[in-house]
Image (cartoon, rainbow, N blue to C red; front, top):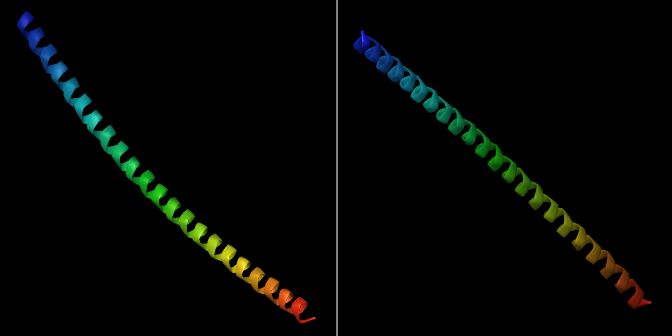
Length: 81
């Protein structure tokens, strides 16, 4: 009788361990997948920010260029008088 109980306990313990191992593996796989999704989103956001930054810098350079032209034109007009 004791042997039967002992065997039953070992079998149950083994089943619980296997179930726990499967659960652990599923959780790890889910976490890895979530990490991949988050990494892709971070990379996409970073690329978008980089593009926006580049566009803003180009706009600022154009504005500075236009201001230089305006100042030069005014300076030329003043020196002609």
